[in-house]
Amino acid sequence: MQPRSEVLVDLSALDHNLALMRSLLAPGTRLGAVVKADAYGLGAARIARRMAGVVDMLMVFSLEEAEVVHAAAPGTPSLILMPVHQIEPGSPAHGMLLRGLLHLALHDAAQLTALERLAEALGVQMPLHLEIDTGLGRGGCLPAEATLLAGRLAGSRSLRLAGVFTHYANAGGSESGTDLQRARFEAWIAGTRLPSDCLVHSSSTYAAIRHERFHHQMVRMGLAWTGLAFDGTRDGKFLPAVRGLRPVFSWRSRVMQSRRLPVGATVGYGSRWVARTPSTIGLVPVGYADGYPLLPMDPRTLRPAHAERRQVRIRLGQGDASAWFAVPVIGAVSMDQIAIDLSAVAERLPEWGLHAEVEIVSGDPQAPNHAARVAAMTGQHAYELMCRIPPRVPRRSIVNEEPVRVPVQEPAASRAAS
Image 1 (cartoon, rainbow, N blue to C red):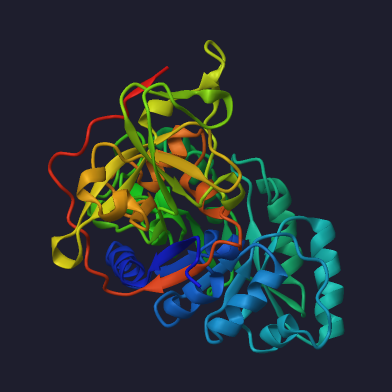
Image 2 (spheres, one colour):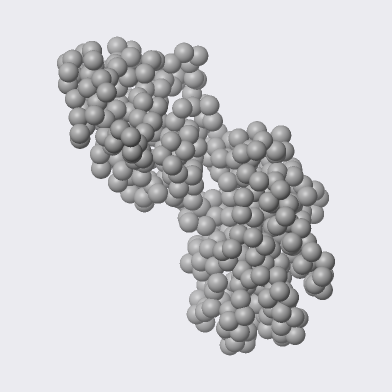
């Protein structure tokens, strides 16, 4: 049976993005990849397996996630970012510790005490990365406490300081704020005696693409490997090569029903869309239960904001002659389906569009339904859009898929009465 919709994971784009990010780093600077939340919904095992041998470290949030990526990329060390206090003896995580492939983030004194007891019980020397809060105010500890923790680690037989790191609060939008955090971080490092093999890192994607001065000894990329950082930072200060990133994620379905509606017919709950002319409407089996986002309500009109800009693309033609055309999403989003206006292209579609391929979210950065644009329209981040697509939507890997041609002119907006 053909799935109602599927998320496509472009492994060729992933390979390209990894190589591009590696090219931005000075020799000896390590490349880490954040693959938490099931690699933002794209499949952590799939992504980690592809990254094996290319990245130097995989970052996850939990023990369970670490075990998943270790099974897929058994030779690549993992860093768990959440405060871990307990690991079961004999578990896969215990095995990772014995092989030196599991690193833990250290956040506070209580966790350090718990981990020292744990390491002694498990018979391991545990590598820890001390997180220093320089302004994000989320995890980690303030610099003064970090100094005390570093001193305790220096005297421990079962724990070792394998890394120190911080996380920037607004690297995508504020260069001055990011530089202030960097100065705090580097001042702490300058005043602390660190082991010679201690790994210093601070940059997630936006700091990494902003400037080399944020790279330190390793960068932690998430948005970069997905390709969704192609538009750079919000203030326009970033390394030009970032324009070459390619989105890894797209989402496709097909028209399950095509209907001809007369003038005055309405579509969807609330009858928000009304046909001004005889119209051809396609139903696509994707709805909010699949993670298709709802638009925020405009408090002035009590109607969804930006409804006229919400689009998908439909494929016309076959093979090399095929092309994507943008068509409007109309009416309210239902639990399991959306309606699209095919009127402008229906005569060019067999059976008025029945079974035609629909691109719900595009991997083309120029498309009106690219992930970043769909997410922004609904008040989300592209990460949210990917993470909220539930497991009922299957993921499929593609490699070297030929791009579909995009026409110069696309159909006009939907003909509807407001």
